[in-house]
Length: 116
Image (cartoon, rainbow, N blue to C red):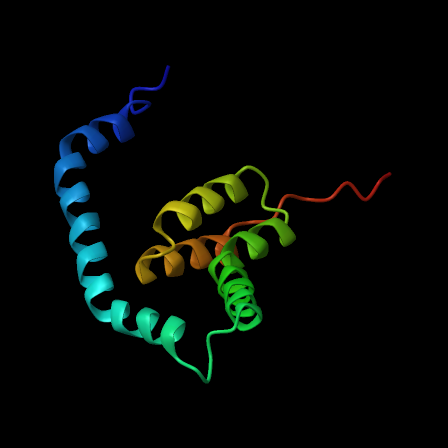
């Protein structure tokens, strides 16, 4: 087993509490700023239909998972799974989404077998 195989485990153990506190704080701050907009969306008479809500959710999910789509379409092999994990768990932070997109765009694609 490589010597750095448990590096992520040590990192997660060492920084688990600060990361957890950061995630909770980001959630509280996000709700503070987005809560009134969400409340307005569901109580407004001009918008708030179920169809528009579903449409916005679909558009949001498309852009949220754009780095994963780029990674899969570029055929970068097992690195696309890493992009998916980063995108899924850290994509809600803008930095995590940018990192996932940069990783997907800069990874070297697997060579295709042109002989077959």
